[in-house]
Length: 261
Length: 313
Image 1 (cartoon, chains in turn cyan, purple):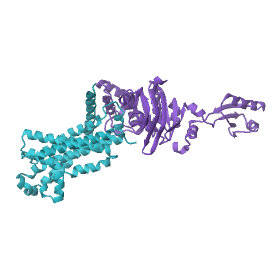
Image 2 (cartoon, rainbow over the protein chains, first blue to last red; image 1 turned 30 degrees about the vertical axis):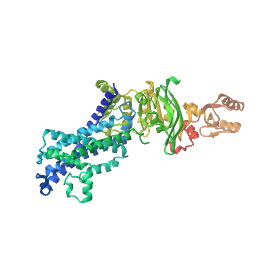
Image 3 (tube, rainbow over the protein chains, first blue to last red; image 1 turned 45 degrees about the vertical axis):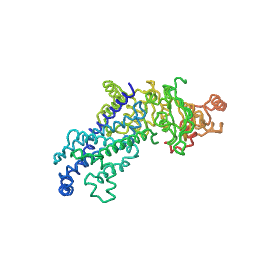
Image 4 (cartoon, rainbow over the protein chains, first blue to last red; image 1 turned 90 degrees about the horizontal axis):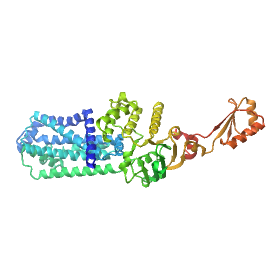
C-alpha cells in the first residue's frame, strides 16, 4: 500500500471511530445543538419584536433574517468545543499513546477528529436551519449563494476544529479546554451576530469590527439575504484559511513533540 | 546471541529538565525470553519503556528492536512491537469488541479476519460475555485484559508490559501471569517492568535491577540471589539436647528451641556444608534435616538499592 492509501485508510478508520462516539452519545450532539436553538428562540421570541423595529430600518426584514448567520456560527463554536473535549479525552485516557506506538499514519487520529467534526457540525447546521425555517426564516439566496454560504461555513468548521484539536492536545485536563470554549462562545456576542456593530460603544465596536466572526457573519448574511458582500467576503475567507492553517500547524507541532512524562 | 537479540540498547540517557532519569543504561534481551526490569517507583522503568517503544526520544544512546533501529526506522519498530502501559489505553466510549476491531482496522486486517481475531482474543481473555458492553462499565482487571488483548491483535514479536499487574487483585494477577507465560511459549519476547519481586522471580529469565536511572545488577534470579551475602544453612535436630549440643559445638547460629532448628550463617557450597557436617559428626550429633537458604529477591533488592521495605511493598 502506498503512503497515501495507508493515510486514507487510517483516517477513515479514525473517522468511523468518531462517528461511533457521536452515535453512542447523541447527548453531545443534542447539547451542542441545544444552546444555539434556545438562543434562536429567545432572540426571536423575546427580543425579536424590539430588535426588528430597532434594526429593521437597515434591513427592512424580520429580525430572524438578521439573526440566523450568527446562530449558525455559534453552532460551529459549540461543535468545536466538543472536538476539543474529545481530543483531550484521548490524550488523558492514554489511547493516543497507544496509537502513537502503532505502525499507522500518526496524524490519522487528528484527521479523524476534524473530519468527524466537519460532518457532525454540518448536520447540526442543517437541523438548525430547519428550526429557523419553522420560525419564519426566509433567506433569498439562490443555489450559488447557498453553496457559497455552506462552503464558507465548512471552512470555518475546519478552522475551529483544527484550533480545537490543538487546544485539546495542549490542555492537561478537560477543564483546561474551558478558555477555548469560552472564547468561541463569547466572541459571537461581541460581533455583528445579534446587533450591527454600529450601535456599540466605541471600544467594543472597534473590537467587534476587527474580530474574525464579524466579517464571516456579515458575509454569510449577505450571501443568504442576497445583499452585496463586497470585500468582506475576502476578509472572511482570509480569516478562515488563516485560522485553519494556524490551527493545523499548531496541532501538528503539539502532536509531534514528545508526550509529557 | 546478537543476531537473535530482540532488544539491544546501549548507553541510553534521558533527562527531564535538570533531573537525570536514565544514566547510561544498557539492555540486551534475547528473542523469545522474558526480561524484567525491577525497580522502585521513580527508578526510570516507564521512561525506558517509553523510549524503547518509540513514544519518546532518548537524549543519547542507541537501540535496536527486532533488528530495526529505534531512531532511523521507528515505523518498522512499531510494526514489530506491542505496548501495554501502566494505565489501560482503551477507548471507553466503545465496546470491547469495537476496541479490538479498531485495532484490527489499524493493522489493516480484512473484515472477516478481524471478526475472527476479535472473537478469539475475547475468548482467550475471558471477555466474550462482556464483548458487547461499553468498556466504561468494565472493572480494572477486565480493562487490563482488554488492553493486552488489543496489543495482541497485530501479533507483535516483542511486547512491552509496563507494570502489568499493578493495582490488580491477586486472582487477576495470577491470570495475567498465566497469559504472559503462554505468550512466551508462543515465542514472543516480553519486556516487563515491575516493582514486585515475586513477579520478576516468577516470570523473568533475566532481571535487571534499576535504581535511580542506573542498572545496578543484571542476571537470572538465582545469580542475583547468590551475588549478595545473607545466606544460611538450616539444621534440624531430633530433640533439644542435640540442638544444645550443636550450639555448644559450633558456637554460632540462631537456634529455634520449638522447632529444634539452628540457622548457621554461610552459603550452601559443598566445602562449607562438608565442614559443618564433619564437625557435628565428630561431636556425634545427629542431624535430621538440612536445608540451604539463599537470600530471596527481597534481600537482593534491598542490598542493591538501599530502599527500605516499606517503599516497595
